[in-house]
Image 1 (cartoon, rainbow over the protein chains, first blue to last red):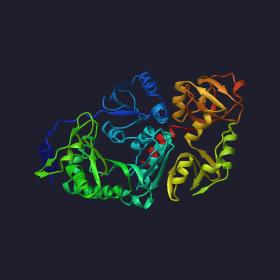
Image 2 (image 1 turned 60 degrees about the horizontal axis):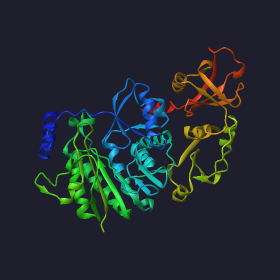
Image 3 (image 1 turned 120 degrees about the vertical axis):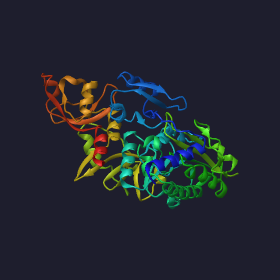
Image 4 (image 1 turned 120 degrees about the horizontal axis):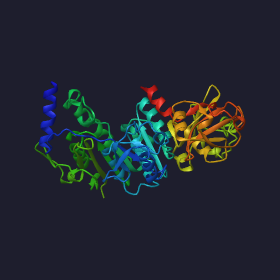
Length: 296
Length: 164
């Protein structure tokens, strides 16, 4: 498919989902690592260097970077783990878990570790996080990230999330920030590289990860499922499949974003799919997130 | 994986800074020459084939111990040889540069030639460490390099570049 055809194909789909293309202006954002420093202190230190930050209204520890004359990924404060550079929408999934302190958490697709560090912060380094990834290079990045941010409660294994039951563990909370086809707002070459076949390939992989996660979820456990894809095959269709097939139900996701559509491309989905949140790219990248728990 | 004796490597290394730190040896595990400090909770959950666990303390390579920045941060909280530097000097140190006498705000512990010292900023946060090139208190020339950089937190960026 030519670039124009590919672009039109996907943009037509988004229109069917109720969103008309507007060029997004994705802003850089940071998240203060509250386990390592007081939020006000970190902000004051950055502002004293001329960095202008604006609080992100829908995130407790997130700030938009309004102005900075230098890279925020190379300051002493960054290298000391006082904050992380984390896209605003990507900060949402971890905040959806309830009662996470002291719990046993699986971060099934963890590298490069932004959400793992966020989990450790919210857990105040209590409990246990088991973080998985498969690629050695990504594991190195994850390990560096944990060291930089002084995370204390995490065990990392090189293991495919589709095989996580091999750990012989049950988890209170499972984060599935699954591999996905991504979206055009943070990847300028997205339309020229992606086809519907990629989307479907990712969707199949994601279902396998979902099914495996449900097997190792404790009776009162919660799963947060998220992607940075805008494609319904990887989002609403997959969650609809999980709700119909696996022993889970959706819980309201009290966060930024709009309720996911329940009728897509003529297919009627379970009404509870509206509890998922779809975030169209504007100030943030495109994103999808939902929270599941065991039935009953 | 194995739990290890009070890792002589670590205590020998810390002795160079005149630092003492109580690490519960029963909670230290070694994997591929890397040392990790766990808590009791993590210890019960740990499986043989882990990649990283708890607090990474450092690694040994050709019998030399290379500390993690988390270990250095833990050590910096206690009594230890350390020099406190101003912001600009701290920044240059993170970029891999040595330290001139003029950038030092204050010192603690032994400052004799050949001693190791942690480098901390005005907030007491550890930026790395180095070796003293002179008896610091006897050195009058503020333009002279007095501490040679051995390791600094800018290494996090250099590691990333190496990976690319």
